[in-house]
Amino acid sequence: MPADDEDRHSERRVRSVPDLDAVREANRARILACIREAGIIARIEISNLTGISPATVSVITGKLLEDGLIEHSEGHGDDLSVARGRPKSFLKLNPHAAYAVGIKLGVQRVFISLTNFLGEVVISRARKVALRRISPQVLARLCADEINAVLGETGTPRSRLAGVGVGCPGLVDHRQGVIQWSPIFEDQFIPFRNIMEEMTGLRVVVDNDVNLVGLAEQCFGLGRNLPDFVVVTVEAGVGMAIVLDGKLRRGQDGFAAELGHMKIRPDGQLCRCGQRGCLEAYVADYAIAREAATFFAATDLGDDAAIDSTIDRLSIAADSGDETAREIFIRAGTMLGIGIGNVAKLLNPPVVFLSGERTRSAAVFFEAMERSLTAQAILPGIGVPRLEIHRWGDELWARGAAALVLETFASERLAGGESVIPPQAAE
Ligand SMILES: [Zn+2]
Image (tube, rainbow, N blue to C red):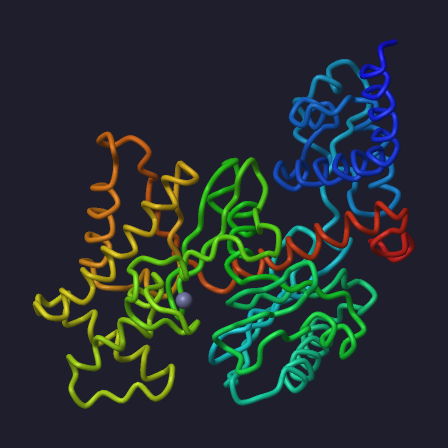
């Protein structure tokens, strides 16, 4: 064997050993995702859909059954195996296998939900609290109390919780669980995962809030069968989530998709991040409210509730034909269209889901956005993503937090040979 062939051969051998566990773990995750997506499915269909061999599907689903993550189901009744006289072997997720708590941190409130293994919301509640006025430790205490309350109200044993998913706007280092910078906190570099884990004794995962929206769309929403799509949210800030080849993309440090802080104008408007010319400084709530303050001369933008009501009043004025109000929304919509146009040129997604409070804005906002996006196409109609407004409340978001927790911790524990819950506790 020539020396370079030998090198390649030994390199392959060295690599193949640690890869086995990763392949097994990836296959488990794919099979779980496949069952989640299908609802009820036969083993052979899992093999057909995932491309994993029937023998491997059989081994992995056997372990998933043993761990109580999936269960047998009566199935559809028209399966070939029934015609051939073999026993039915349909599978579905066990809704009680594990539960997840989702926590969304907002400027003025904390939203908490409990979801089951199917991602169905069992209970949800919101607490009004001004996050800027309390320390991360006080916030963690409040979250811990709320977790106890939702478990108590539903009679869910603590041992059934796979973990807690926390969504926060801003720069969140998902791997380290650190909120590096967020417009809703005074402090920076908050190790919120550790603070929450110490306070609750539960496994906690922290992510950018819009990434959770992306996961929700992918697992339960409009992105279910789409390998590539983008979510853009506009409210207190401008957020984005990118799903490519069926995977949420966070980048090396978890700071990818910071659409709101992409520069749109050199030395432009001042942004909350401290820099100038960010897209957010023209489109987010505070930017529109800043413009509106000159429109409503005596407006006080002292708090977030005042910003909300100012934008609502401005939207009504624009929809009623007031030229100044229309211009404010047209400018913001045009800027957002430019931002999304740049994203389209980078990623060429087939669809962009628009979400967040600003999807309730004046009609001219959307008209201007579409116009500006379409005008950027180099060839008419080519490379322009479809814009879909997807208004949804906290519920779908909570399901994204659940998907993050259940997939993170379920696959982690299975890889280590440990079940999410003791088999005797499964129903
Ligand atoms: Zn910025």
